[in-house]
Length: 369
Ligand SMILES: Cc1cc2nc3c(=O)[nH]c(=O)nc-3n(C[C@H](O)[C@H](O)[C@H](O)COP(=O)(O)O)c2cc1C
Image (cartoon, rainbow, N blue to C red; front, side, top):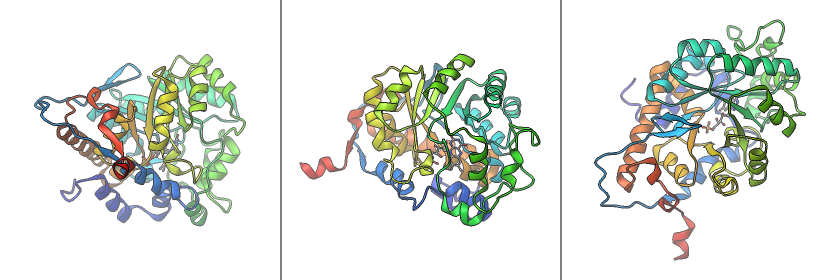
């Protein structure tokens, strides 16, 4: 990789130079006027780290566990759709990079690589499958069973997308998947996947979602999923204590605090603000994860301090991919590892368990003193 790329924002700037507009806008944008998109990051900076010193930092470890699996770093890859627009190796490259650093990769339902392809090319990677529920429940059940057969270790049900948010850039661009790419988890003819390669006037993704995804999704569907799969179920997109509690009652093994990278509702809380409420409500009954705006090791540190078990990365992995396929993706993960290790060493945390809530404080605290 170019030696001038030393942090995630360097990768982002570089990806902005090389990606075609259709893909760049799809990856970059948030819903409507993108207030939440900016706030996800800004809110992380409202937390300060309270370093402790003189605590023997000679031996350190970033290892932790997720759903009983040991991972070498406390962050993983969030599902993002259609990664082959960023690089010909797409999801395969990201999955392999996750395996190399020793963490989990989540494959989107609307990926440009299939569950079987990922299993074949990233057999050593801890793999999660992100599910969108289709109106046709047989299509949905079939996907779940294929993921299970392909050795995926968890099902991540996205709850925040009964339909897709309004992304103005995609409407302006009449976003469509380039004709050489396809929704790899489906057969083009029988499951309308080619709908995404066209646009009837607005965003092609919105039209695809409207025609195939089920807006009647409810808690009954979560119960149905627990009956049809042995994979643990993680609910992705939770932003309130109320839904976190319902999730636990429905049998979720994990609650993933997310606002879908600010792509659904403009005006929801930044995820780091929603995290403490969810952690409090969950009371340790299941694991809690988070994503949204994390692009530095210090950011990850703050979420761990506030009670997240793992932090997931969406766009940073697309920027890495765009800059150099698997190597670019790996570099992004590796930069975050160096940064997280550094902030741990500098703040007196030799292990992930040492990153407790006393390690962070809100900015306003200092104004009140
Ligand atoms: C281009 C793009 C595509 C996404 N596609 C999906 C998807 O298919 N399924 C899903 O559950 N979330 C999807 N998300 C949301 C991500 O999983 C994640 O919640 C979000 O990107 C995290 O924010 P970050 O990009 O700031 O890291 C997508 C996000 C982006 C940016």
